Length: 131
Image (cartoon, rainbow, N blue to C red):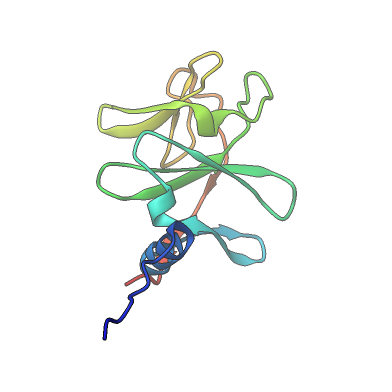
C-alpha cells in the first residue's frame, strides 16, 4: 500500500513563510498599525503603505535588518514617490533619494541631507512576532 503525501501549494508555502516572519508595525495616532511582514521588505527597496488618515508612509530595511518609516510624499514635488527611491548611506546615515529630483532624506530623522531646512515625517517602527 502506498501513501500519497500532499505537496504544499505556492499559496500555502507563502502563508507559512509569512507566519514565520515578524510583522512590521508603524506607530500612528491611534496606536500600532500592522503594515506587512518583515520578509516583504528588502534592503534597497521601499514599500508604500496607506495609513488610516489617508497619508502614505514609505517603509525600508537596511542590510542589518533595521526597519525605517518616513512619509512617502516628496516635499519638493508633492508626489508620493519616496518608497520608490534609491537607498544608500552618507557618513553613516541611511537615506533614500527621491526618484524625481534626487534629494536625499535621512531614514532615521527625515531630514533632507541636501537642504536641512526641509524634512519629511518619520514614524516609529517595531517588529513583532514571527518564529
